[in-house]
Amino acid sequence: MEKMMHRETERQRRQEMASLYASLRSLLPLHFIKGKRSTSDQVNEAVNYIKYLQRKIKELSVRRDYLMVLSRGSFLGSSNDDSKEEVEMMSRKNHVVVRQCLVGVEIVFSSRCCGGQPRFSSVLQVLSEHGLCLLNSISSIVDDRLIYTIQAEVNDMALMIDLAELEKRLIRMK
Image 1 (cartoon, rainbow, N blue to C red):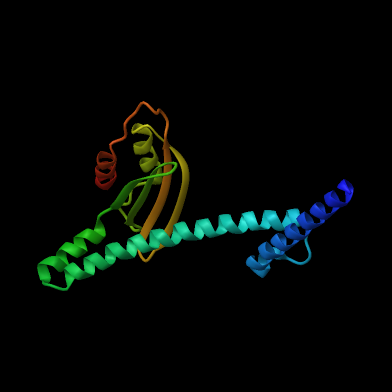
Image 2: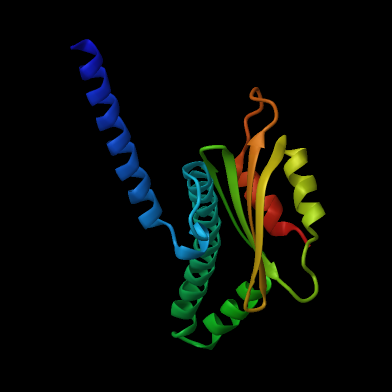
């Protein structure tokens, strides 16, 4: 009797796992499945797809932040010539947003692509001076601006990072 119950629960478990794998397979785009694959390959492809989606989300959030900065500028620019000059001046400056995130600090850094842009190594130097260690970085070019999204963690937990000071320092960079 006990053996039959064990077989039945095991059969139900296998059926449930098969339906879960089928559900996972249905969520993946075709180019991630690539024919008939083992379940472990399908799980690995699901992990790759999740990482791909995370990268795309970060890139799109950088683009969204940039477009929000531009839209704020267009509201300013619609009133008069003085504010149009102000918008033009803003577009030449570096735009920096520093905020806390789960891993430590996230920095979205936007600068003009042509001439006068700070080197990435200079940005890393500033992070190092503030006791931060680079974890992840994504760079993209939108129109004529180079946008970095940087995630960094605090090297020494005893250090208190002044996010406003870090933001000011990155804005002043040339």
